[in-house]
Length: 82
Image (cartoon, rainbow, N blue to C red; front, side, top):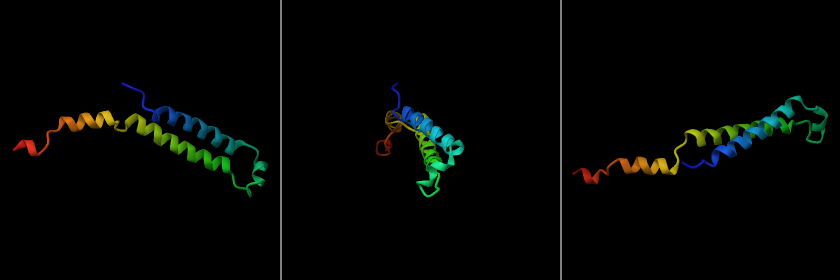
């Protein structure tokens, strides 16, 4: 049983998303004058956090190619049932 690549990628994006979100919430608001007052750290932190959660969920509960192949092999084709 190998490690699904989506799990470490999801963990990386969750960590980065959390860091950016926390900095966007509690950081100095004067740095956002260059971006027209838009809190880019908070916005992109939330985007990265959501992407990381999706990747981790797909890695944890998603069907791997091996599982799909085993499930397809276990069901007999309809043409052979005759």
